[in-house]
Amino acid sequence: MKHNVFSRYFLAGLWNTVFGYGVFAGLIALYADYTHYLLIALGSNVLAITNAYVVHKLWVFRTKGNYVSEYIRYWLVYGATAGLGLLALAILVSGLMVNIYLAQAGVLCAQVIFSFMGHRKFSFGSSINS
Image (cartoon, rainbow, N blue to C red):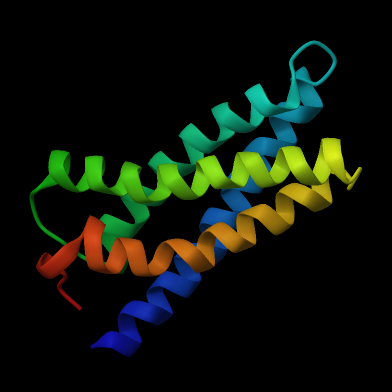
């Protein structure tokens, strides 16, 4: 059922946002003195996207098999949103002087919203078990 998938996606989005933001904030706290914030954001995105894939595959969309092809498609969708997120983060922090923590929180929320359709239609496609 579509409603159940969206409800699970919404809850997964909350978890993934907390996880991704927590990893980012923790890495900033540990490494910001000697590592550029965009490199930290890139590393935190790799961890967050991999965590999100596992949650989406096993709990949200409940697909079986196709691990490699789904993971590649997942990276294409989430990687694109992450790339746009990094661009937005750079614009917000360096261009508009928005607080780095506030900027990343906004970027992560936007990523959750924009990635749903890509994952539903492309990453996991017709193999979704609602």
